[in-house]
Length: 180
Image (cartoon, rainbow, N blue to C red; front, side, top):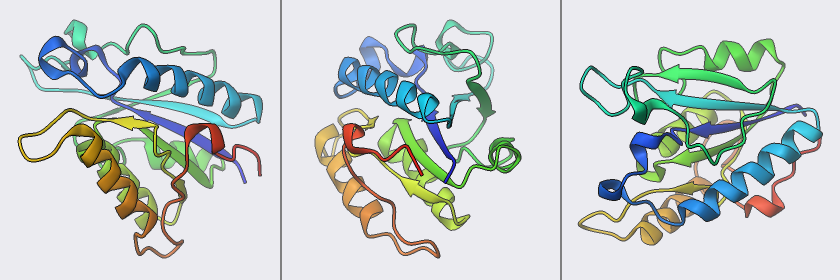
């Protein structure tokens, strides 16, 4: 089964002193390792970047639109641009996956409770076998929950999500199956 690693919104504008994220450096290290494993196994790595409106830190003309410099973007990696939480909505993601015969997605990135959650649900609704690494996404503390609580909550939801192809597989990045 051909696999794609989808890395969502790991952009400079999402990781500022005002928007601290849980375990940023650990997440970047795990994503770099996972991306290397996916490529080695013949899969694809797709970076999804949010295009914000004018005056937004994620606007393509702003420095915050750039991917974190610590991420290892390799030759052959793909870029998909989005304007909503759903990485499929109004983007080339589904067509890119189909043209590359991708059947299984590993969905990672920022923020757990927004773009990652929406994309996991959208992938499952489209029938993709979906893996959501438990330690492959991050968010910030919110007034009502800590980042760790939000991450744990979403991992639980995705592992029990009712969808045509079943729920997402939730496991550690180190345990993600990248072959067949």
